[in-house]
Image 1 (cartoon, rainbow, N blue to C red):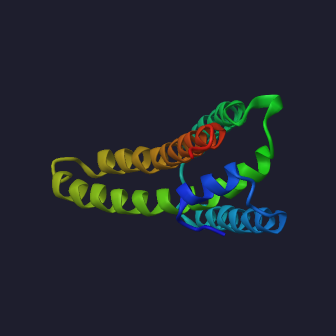
Image 2 (image 1 turned 120 degrees about the horizontal axis):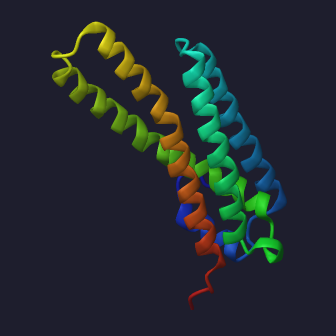
Length: 160
């Protein structure tokens, strides 16, 4: 199993070197990541219902549109092992993207605290709500895009 090396995973998927037991392990590890994210969402401060609903609708649209695009990138109806490939790619891509996003969010927060003195408390609260809600769809879009690009690479002919 690869936790970081997406390039090698793409090669192994392209050359059919990933075994069924490895696909199972990718599914389990990816599912654990999803469950952990549900846990973190459950313990975070409550957001207004309208913002949660908006985030849900945006993520639903991303899920449907990107899954269809990734399915087509895998060859559509003639593609092979779509779900196996998707879950195998999901794990290392989410881990790498998460590290990048954590660093980016920390930097944004540091910059934001230096430039937010001019805002009133209610304005800051509203801006922070929208900023916090925007992170999830942006993260999801980046993950889907990277899976899409990886799936396209799997479909490319092997280089000698």
